[in-house]
Image (tube, rainbow, N blue to C red; front, side, top):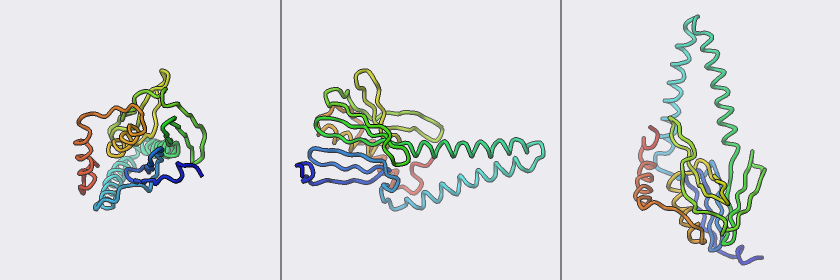
Length: 203
């Protein structure tokens, strides 16, 4: 057994990620079951689902009522199917990181299977920061971003501010260069308050 296996491991599960840290190692894995157990979490999910279902039903029925809109109705259904398949495919493609004091390993997975692994020496990894990958009307998709020999590396897509702050702290503790905004602690507190609110974070 190595020394690292004897070290106590602290595990945090929230925001859709499982964060496992010890004195010399950090592992972050996307886990759909890893959501912070907030008081109103289930109610928020039910309200969101009902509102989206109601909007979708009204739009589809409106299209289906008119003969002139039958084609639009068909196109809307086909478009919805393709959108769901696209979103499902994106959810299946994930990444995790395993960090030590010597290297940062990025592991890409598809349907739970490892498809690619990249290992970067710590001294080659540029400053790591929480960044926006893309934006849409439903919100921003964020994760961790760093540069290795001129190449941008994006990992942990879907990461939220609360978990990003903890991960950056752990990476800094392991000796990596990290970028944390001075306003980050206050932003984290506000994010936690929104999570605990009944309707927080869904508009």
